[in-house]
Image (tube, rainbow, N blue to C red; front, side, top):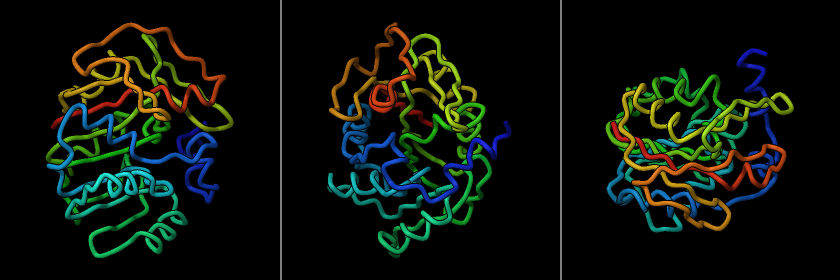
Length: 226
């Protein structure tokens, strides 16, 4: 199966809830996890990969965080049109593109990149996008990845790639892409419960992909600094 086949679902016009494991989510928990590692208020130019239905942008606004400029990049041209109509403004833009190849030089630099429930679907690993996007960043990359315990493994379900990651694999991938791992926190996306502090990496039994809800909520909040 080639990469475009794996991406086909995300290029379409799926209902919002299907973008996040059949559950509509809010964006607040993502930023509450990130704020345990650094002060989000320092971000002035924000890049989001995979804005979906706009939940992270909504989370920023809910927390009173207003960057000078925001750009959301999504594979789906239909979602980009809808997001632009509903949320776009002079300082909030959306564009269609693949995180592994998109040219953002007209908008760069960004001092913060955010992404949720997106990088686990990037083939062959999240590093394929991160190493490309680094050229447009001057600050941090903040993303969440599914907690795969000590042994992460790629899983294809219904023609969709779902990748689980171990702490060691996350840190090593960040380093290869030119980032320092500033923080790594396990958290529950649904309840915002935190299991470990950023400075600790603990062993944990791998999670089963049989349970969509488990795959949805048990995640690592990853912060990489350029």
